[in-house]
Length: 605
Ligand code: AGP
Image (tube, rainbow, N blue to C red; front, side, top):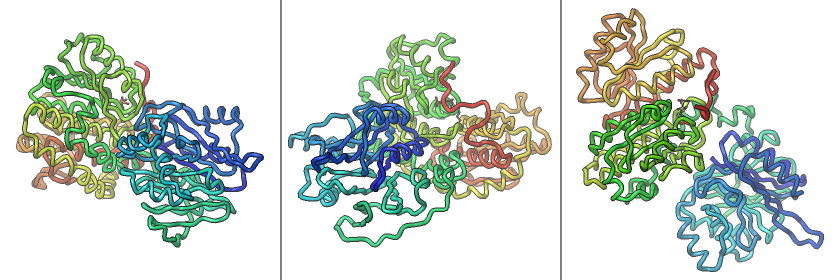
């Protein structure tokens, strides 16, 4: 997610901006930049920009070489959404007369039409970004002061934004405003600090103004004035923050993993967005009907959690599209001499877009003329650049090593892909298309049970072993739940197709053995209950995750999830499993965000 910083005061702003960007690095980014208002000897002003693809440290070197300075300035770390990571696409951006500088966090959904209008008016654009329309729109509406021009310009924007603006026309002030992206203003002694969130301010001040949607602030050396979109003055009071710096980076959550578990509704909403309206999903993929109709085999290739997401897509795609699907562990795929041709579609799932095994599988598929589609959370990643087609999940940066929100957005994307392909193939998926729009709200309902799930964790955190069982759509998600428990609590855990237990593994069930069972698949309800009966008679402790009405004799602990098509149930049943694993890890005082032996992106084979 992008990060914004700003400064208005007496100090030279460059180090303040660079330090602020450093404290926002945890949000994930691929480029960075700063802009300062430089006063010339003849009392004129220049906007000096220094920006680069890469890290904040690279920016620090460039800024030192450039000798940039000033007392008013803005800075930005970019997490690319429109336009790949590059120097020119980095923020800040200026209008084509270089008199207005802007940094922006969010997505301007109507930027293309605005850009066309501005180009027809003679404005020139240098980047591929949506952001660059903002300074030109402000310039185009400038009639004497930057605040008025900003109010008029932002009324034309659709989408989300947090914006900081400086202008040579009003060189002693900064204008900030926001809609659906956070923006905080810190109050110092005759100086003000602007940032996307509290961590970047805390070392300077704990007095903060939280800007609300549709509010504007005009910040000068020793005064700040707030306005609404009708230019009426607002009487805003600052809040005093008593968070530690580390707590602030996690927005008050104790760990990134818990923050990311609770971000899943937002992440799923952003990924689904309006991608299922008027075939936007396929146009995002740049995939045409002819290609879809030509597919006679689909491989879904990934590692770990991403592979489990792929498994959840297999049943669905084969059931509705009648196209054979094979889900392969990436590190195995290229050594088994898979059958690939020009009618093969290879889908790679990868949060990081850098996993070496998955990248190697992609390259093999391309070498044998398959069409390749990357589903990734990382814009400009190697896998995204080498695949023929790419869809970016909008989970935002996932910092915790154990994947949670990225997994759910991968599921959502696979479901959208199946729905979009089905419509091309004239297969009726109307009900599923309606249901997928409700999933984010249903995830929220389950998250409200977090305290109850923590009480269950307290009964099992000292266990040495655990099992996960599920049938049909409930089996792949059991694999993911088991991985979550393993990787952050170090409890030995195994997942089985429930019907498979009696073929050997049931020998491991003894009195008190914990078994997490999931039942959401209507067709397999009775068989699943029979499997539970088998383990209860051998003394197992059953945690049942279900949206069916089940007699209490089948469980010791019941976690109810909202009803939904069993095709999509993994998006819901995984939430209790993530929370259970998280709380058990915390109860064992383990490093839940950085488990032993693990890396967030495995870039070696
Ligand atoms: C997820 O909890 C694990 N950290 C790991 O299995 C991960 O899913 C796997 O390494 C694949 O990573 P990717 O999605 O970035 O390719």
